Image (tube, rainbow over the protein chains, first blue to last red):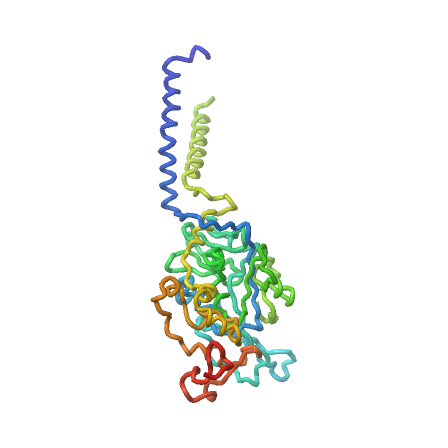
Length: 268
Length: 146
């Protein structure tokens, strides 16, 4: 085999190596160019997602159904009309019809425009109502989120601090996640042509502010906090220890980071 | 080695090389840093502009109002709950807030069987025949009469 090594073959190999080295910067430039088209990311804001663990608690007995949270969220996050990242549901549970042998009637649930402008007067006469209440809803920030599992491009993810986010530069708008969410918290944003959802006002909480809905709620129905950095006499931890908190659709094993107190069995 | 095998091997090598080149070019820089997503997306989402300034920003200047508010029933309300978004005003104090909207009083206080019992509720139809809530109530100290 050694007699095969000729001047020509050695030169050829050398030329190949030099050519390869010359092509490397070109490939790098090309890669950067392709990625710039696919995704551009501004300078980091110095927020470490590993140092936080967010949790939201909702107090059903405090919600007055004014809908200011829905308005605040829509303005803060530029949510298109007809879609809601958070919304309020009004539950009306009528008294059981006589002779039905039941403890309560069929629940009536409404949420006109997500409760954005408050609620109209009830159509059910007051004396027929067994129980009525408001339930604020938003993304449940699942720890084992069905929506992130179905994303075919890795555009939606659970951040290390517990927020479930959508990378709008990468989302292809296929809508799998919208169908996968058992809580109906995602929607298709026609402006951006991507899936959209509550980010827990990520741009606010990373700056040390409260999410818009928590800030604006006049009744303290929403309690928000950081489990890794509790403040002295932390309202969130006090709330969780003082109340029996529940998750929505616990049987699904999604592990929500949004918990409710004072939840009726009818709420799903 | 039979030539058809050599062709197959070369084709396989070609496909594998193409796959790795394409993957190298198409995978974004921070993909896979924290998980199966672009880690830079976290900062991208965090860099969005805020809209509501927050009570802490209001209280920095309006201390007298904040102290008054802290004494009454409305102590836990954020300023922007009633006054509207104040970020433009925080950035430039010459910029005035939107006019105080009195329909917000009724939004919260109108009686409804769905509202919790602790909430002060009124029936606006027979509560007062005048127009302005502020004729009888001080919004910052609701139990006080002006």
